[in-house]
Image (cartoon, one colour):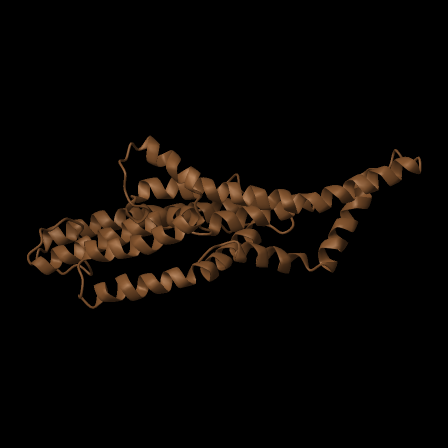
Amino acid sequence: MKTSHRPSSFLQNPFCTSAGGSRPPGWCRLLKVFLCLGLAAIGLMLAPSLAAQTNTANPGGLMPFRLSVGLDSAQQPADVDVAIKIVFAITLLSLAPSIILLMTSFTRVAIVLSFVRSALSLQGTPANQIIIGLSLFITLFVMAPVWERIDRDALQPYINKQIAGPEAYDRAAGHIRTFMLKQTRPKDLELFVAMAKLGPSRVDQLPLKVVVPGFIISELRTSFQMGFLLFVPFILIDLVVATVLMSLGMMMMPPMTIALPLKILLFVLVDGWELVIRSVVRSFVQ
């Protein structure tokens, strides 16, 4: 009796047979799949070298594309002007967060809103993203008149080539300086004038290196004063709740459990967010 012999392929393995010898087990089939993928990956890695050899053998062949990275010298004055504008734009974008944080009304607004959340004894409500976003939009609202004056007196004349770059910068800095000086206390300004050892000079001619730190200190002082006033009514609620609980003999009851809902209820009834935002916006002298 003749037994039929099936030709074995190169993927078959004598160890990859089941007990009955009819069908390979699952791990063996998975091994074959990985082997095929490995052969395909080797082919992809060898393809560039084969293509390079083909191009060397056939110099007249065309490549599908070519990538070149390098630095070329400027051929015309316009190229230099464009390069300077690009560098200036990148520098301005990198300094934009510092300008928004330290030279606008953002600092006061963000700190006051953070004090509101702390006074209400709320740890994560509103979230930091909401406070920062609201502070940014209030800053845009407060600084809108300043931006309009800068656009009218500095940006548009510079775009229309009516004034040079240094003059446009001086005009824009003048409007920002005027806004900051209106919010800065004379005592804070005199501190940095003395530390910079500047001689007698007019206030509107002080450099930004003196005006900006004085403005920041004044903003911190004003925002902390507003934060203290926000804390007073909520501290009174905590004291009243703690006193009532102790008089009732409920010393094991945490006062915060009763005081927190009362704080939120009081803040909602008096329309607290509207009062806070109105007070913050009106605190800026335009």
